[in-house]
Length: 150
Image (cartoon, rainbow, N blue to C red; front, side, top):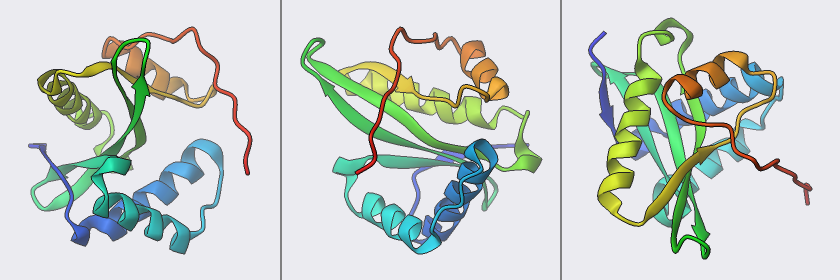
């Protein structure tokens, strides 16, 4: 499968929102509110300070995605790029789609010159995702993630 990696256009918003909904259901059994997700995707596409997406395509067909969001580290005087919203369509899994997306992020991070690290979080029970991330050279962090919804 010949894969190309590209940034999205506004025309890709519905696909990204759909993939985000499928991701939430497959990984966390969470049903997202489609209008909220669509507004969130449009907001991020319109404002790169909130992050950006990359799409993996087989011809014109979008088969995978990921998003990058940012966290400033005063300790490292650089950015952490957080990989989020990772989704590869079921029929494209196991074919190196995520690897190509990840390698594109690494190239961008290295060329930016101010990225301290690439990070992501993964569900504790997502063994396949964890194995993929380890195979690409990522290591488990010493940090635990806590949150409080507001």
